[in-house]
Image (cartoon, rainbow, N blue to C red; front, side):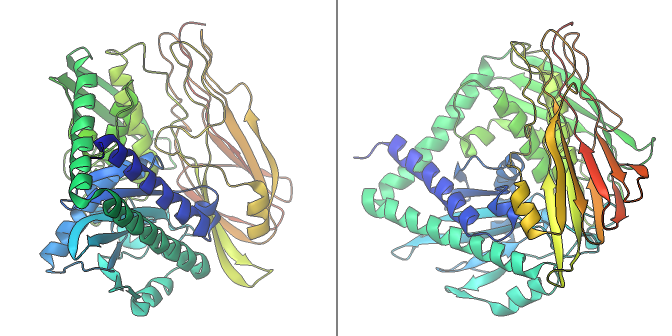
Length: 521
């Protein structure tokens, strides 16, 4: 009889292969180059069995999103038959923000439901007034883009053209959106085929038992790890910019209780705002579970077993557990980063040999778009830019990397210039931006470009006014800065959560934060 470990590893590889298929088939550079997507295999009860190590903010949220999607289908009396695919981007169901389009499909073997395959991918534009659909001025979710409730986009193996046309009619870059969505559907077919092959090879009972055992193994291993931590309650707080003004700062606090092999994270923040800085509970859970998982030394499988050892609470109606119709685009981006920061800061008292100083603390989201004079078509560009990681208890931080809740790659300059009317003028390490200390924080990034046609730029980021903190006497990293040098030579500072019109020849210079230092210099 096959061992459960073989089934477990094979299932993880299925999730990874789904990601490879999705990335290779996608049209937008955001997915094809940056790999802004995540994939998972789910059992018939809706439990995450295996996830590919893709985007952290997607991973934990899939636990919430899958259950919500299946519950929504059940409440509507909709059965998922063989060959069906449900699509949705409703953050209050799928668990992140509108740009993350989620698709899920059941896997049937000999007429019996054996599980599901699911993936989530960040679409560059899902409608709304802002290029990139991350609107700094949104006061409700309806100003961020098109909300797609759970609906079958494939039924009995046939693509529903009416649903596809409705979706594409609302986006600014329909060619890329259609290509990315079809890539997601192709990845589901790959995943479902591989699950069926696995069951054909080892037997359905053996695979189901292997999945159950891998979940139990993850639970036991995670519980054992947490049991080795000092029991107690640990607290910390940090600040987050939520707008362009000096007074636009909020406090986020965490209380982490460690007891009997479980971690309970209680978070507090102000009530939800009429700004796109709220997070749905899926995002808050993803950030919290990522922070706790990062403190574990064992190679704990990321599935329901791990998640069952981590409890997360946030007041309903707050920025960390918003209710509709609050806008939530940046909750997925900036709020998630700060949740990780504050949990790690709290746990630095319990595990001082494991927690680094603060990393850059922002995804530095750049949204850009306009009409390409070469084609006459609307274009939309999105990327996140890395920064410095925090110095560690035993070494310097790492320069110029994506940190914590973003795990994407960069968009190669050659690809961006070939795809959009932009020309890059620099891409380098921001030397000296890491915080000083016994061990120095990693340096941030300088990335700059000029547009060759009129365009509109939006920046959603943080750590402009609050610097990444150091630990044990280490100094904070340098803050973020964005500057526009107009074609006339005039320089303008750009504040976060703002939108600016650009003219041909205008240059945008983005400087991301360095990580905090560790230990007294």
